[in-house]
Length: 277
Image (tube, rainbow, N blue to C red; front, side, top):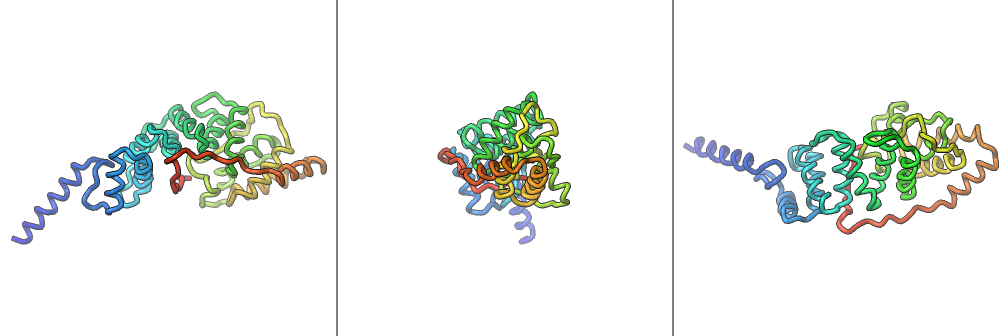
């Protein structure tokens, strides 16, 4: 009879777990921390909701589930949580747990970008440069990239070097540079989010400016890692062959005097996040 009792207990556990609903009520197998996190999230705490989004996306302590991740990110994003807004945009951009939709990705990226999220600003720039979900617009791409670059975002800094340095034959993105160098590792603190496959070869009317390009490439090589840093160093070497000594001196002076802008982070929007790329 003990064997029958064990089977009954196992069956009850399965029923309870199945009836909980994906990403909703904590299952018996969840850790005490995750049980508490679910409880906080159900009571409307945006930080807990966003944290659960990460847990389900990564499969940390729960079964990996992009649908549940997107649902929790949306719940927090609708409360104005900048991190969740960025990540919900990422889910729409990649079609993870939701239907792929560039227009919705842009909408959520923009909400996060308007709150000063540098990753969202960088990704918006990439979408305007490529014309993903919007007509291609180089000036708008540069505007968003500049906002991110001023916060020390190395991928955005590289992108600006690419845009202003038209003619330097730089890799078009950190992703292209990764492929060219044969590296599989992620590069840059925020390489993550929307692949930052940056700009297409056309720069949509952005004026060539080697001084600005070289300044941003100096900063990208200083702040970036991996392929971003390597691509920026490569771009600097190519620029030096086309610039006068006076232009190089001016670009170096600007880089030396450059200071990052201070980002204002809305309350409840700070998370220790790891972006997907």
